[in-house]
Each structure stands twice: as C-alpha cells, then as structure tokens.
Length: 455
Image 1 (cartoon, rainbow, N blue to C red):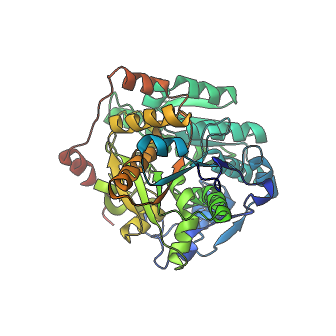
Image 2: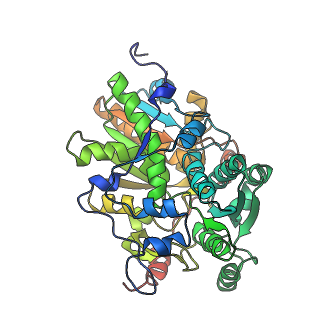
C-alpha cells in the first residue's frame, strides 16, 4: 500500500460542500432548452412551476449561475451520511496485477443504499418550503423511490411512487422499504391513470419503462391539488444536487495530491455520472486541468452509443416537455434487464451536449460481463455493488487491464453509486448461469427512432 494514501479517505463535516455546482455556467455552448410540445417554444418558469416546485423550476432553467447555496437544513440532513468516503481499491489493483491506481467514490452508506438521497432530500425540502401536501415520482430499480420515500417521511410529506413493473416484481424488498417509509407504490404502467391505461392498450403485457412511469407520475401530480412531480435523474436540477459527490471527490483528491486521468460513471439518465464529473468537467472547460470521462450504459438500452441526438418527449405518454438529448425514442421499451436504474430511453441534456462536443466518451456493456465484474469486485473489495454501479466497475477493470498491458500508471476514478443487497435475484440468475444478454437490433431501434417528433 502507498503509505501516503489511506485505504479510505474521509473528509471532515467542515469540508462538506456549502454550494452545489452548475456546470452549464461554464459551458460555452449550452444545452438546448426544453420546449413546449404544443408551441415548439422554450418552456417558461410559469409552465414549469405547474409541474415542479417553483424553486426547482428556477434551477432547471438557470444555465448561468455557477454555484447555488445549499440550504442549511439540507446540509444538516447530509451530515447523517456525508461526506462519503473516497476509497483506494488496493485489493482490486492487486487482484488485477495492474500498474494503474484505482479509486472509487462510495455512495451506499445510507438507508436508501445509493446516491439518490442527495437530490431526494433537496427536492422534498423545496416541496415542504412551498407548502405542498406531497410529491409524485417514478422509480426504476427502486433506489430513487426508496430515497424519496425516506426524505418525505423525514419532512412529513406524502409520497406516491410509480415503479417500473419488472422492477416491482424483481425487487420486492426495495418496494417494501418504500412502503415502510410510508410511500404508496404502484407498478407501472397501471390502470390508476388515464395515460397508464393508454400505454397498456398500446403495449399489452409490457414490463414497463421509466418513460411509462414518468407519464403516470406527472398525471398524478397535475390532477391532485397540492402535489408536484419530482424526478430522480435526467433533469439539470438533479445533476446540480448530485454535484455534492464530485465536489467532495475533488476536495479529497486535492487534499492528497491525486490527479485522476480517467473518470468513469454508469449512465442511465445521468444523475450519478453528472454529479461525479461536473466539478472536474468545470476545470476542463475552464482550461485548468484535463481528464478523460467515460459514460457506461447497458447494451440493452444504449442511448448514447446508438441513439440519436434530437428533441424527444421525456416520457412514453408524451405529457412532458420536449428535451434535446441522445434518445432511443420515447416509445422504446427496453428489455427487462436487472439494471433497472439504467433503462431510460434518453440521456440528460447536459451530458448529451457534452458528449456531442466530444468531451465525454461512451461505452455500452453487456449484462453478463457487468455481473462478472461485480462478482470480482465483491470478492476482493468486500462490498456487493448495485448492478447499475457495476457498469462503471466493468469499464474501470477494462481500463486497468489496459494499463497492465502497456505498463502505464494511470489513475482511474469511478463512481460506486450504491449497494446491491436488494438485487439478489439478479445475482442468483448470474450465479445459476441463467442470465442472458439482450441487444436491440437496428430494426428495433429504427422503429422507435422513426417516431421522434418533427422539430
């Protein structure tokens, strides 16, 4: 072990960030604005405030303010589980016999088991400040729903969660954690909303998608007085809140003189990846430092690597604004793979723009390869990773093995977004040799992409 670098790097509470970072402020070419599908014009604060909390709507539309103060009540809540550790993966390095140095930022040290709590408490806080009764949302694998139900219980808010049907069935324990915190959990698509009924009629027997669940959650919010919709990924406001991850990581790296060469994160909608890389990307955009960034997505839902950069609906029911993003089409229903949090049809507009500018790389990986990496990591590092996180582990291992071949001493940093202890059905399938890989055909993607709105 390097005597100068501890196995786990912990910051003090005094080093907890007091502001979030908005990377759009440093982007010369900004992400394209959200559009009203009826008029084709950028959505206004008034329009956004009909769906989201007003303060969150302001954050969503603000692409010029670099730093946003974190309210004291949110910082006090963060102290329950933050700062989170930056860990040197000494044992993984040894197992790989690599010349690379590997670090990971671990976000699983809270009851929700993932990074999602960072934004859940912020969004619930602003809903409470606005005097709302409750919030509605969707969840894929369940980490976001778990985090939001925890935050709402803490603040005394009602919480209605629409959970993607295949995850509702695959991950019953995560569902029960939500219910324990008082949330109402509905498998999506459902018969409880008009848009849910419409989706079921069009796609009978569907296992659902995040796009479907978003449609139902938005309808539930706008048809119930005193409720607003909140989202766990994709939106710029969520990436802002999640920068607490990257800001802490940067502070820890600076403290110990660590300079990452490559920074890796799993990518579904973009909350974890954006939160981790944004502060480092800011330095790159300002010319202060250079890094490689790699977004890792499942081969079964490859929005960056095989999608189209275009305006699309954020939801399957087409009730949300249009966002310019790398998308597979709002009607794309991915296979029921076990990385439920990475099954969204599109990618954050911020990350999509950065990728389009060539500032981020993207790779897609197959499910069995991901679980091979997850198992290897668990056996040597002692933490059972979530399937989503394991996409980043897969590529971190691949990068480390490249260093082994070349003898390069690169420093690799990846985000370990959460734990996999509610994902044991997936591990069982892998261990029993029953897990398969599914990659959509070009014809399947074309069928969905051909239906993109004409903007």
